Length: 250
Image 1: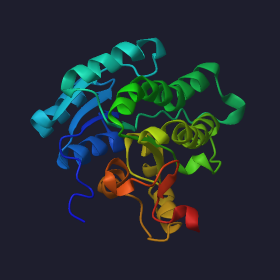
Image 2 (image 1 turned 180 degrees about the vertical axis):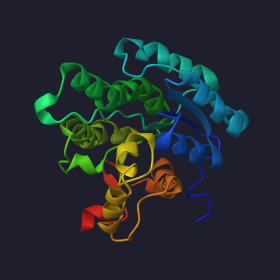
Image 3 (image 1 turned 90 degrees about the horizontal axis):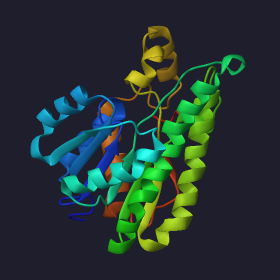
């Protein structure tokens, strides 16, 4: 159907837009006609993306883990292009501390960025989405939302929480036209997975565990993301869509 994936004129906010899948999400949404506000800590990287995307993109350098700053941040985002109807939570942290060595600082920083920030930033934008009767919230889950990996207890706890939070947000807000879903990426080459891809043998083993037989490329996220951010997913909410080449199917 013509226009089913069209998001022309929509305003989107993408966290973690300076690198990895967050950066790719911003590129995909801007390419599909949305005006995108990217959030991340690294101002120079955001400025580089703005140079690439032009007037369709603006950015704010910020610390998303600072919960007290979220109301002001939401106002700053809205001042760019207007209130966002699409919100993509791609910012993430993995301290890779093994269970016996998890620190309070590592645990708190992981939960703050991966789980707390997505909820409270969503909460800040929901009133505007309710007023318009339309919204799309996409969180980033993980293979570790359902599987335990070595050195991943804090990250896994946060991503298990993301999956349940997504379902709970869908229960709370979908009756107002706000669909809430998550993408669960497999192994994609990003800064967050640098430790995995720095070992070619390990990366090859991960690829072999997929049904498709390879690890993910950034552009593999484009279609699933546009599906969840557009009219194509009008009757889809509270779901975790695994984009993992069939890793979790084997």
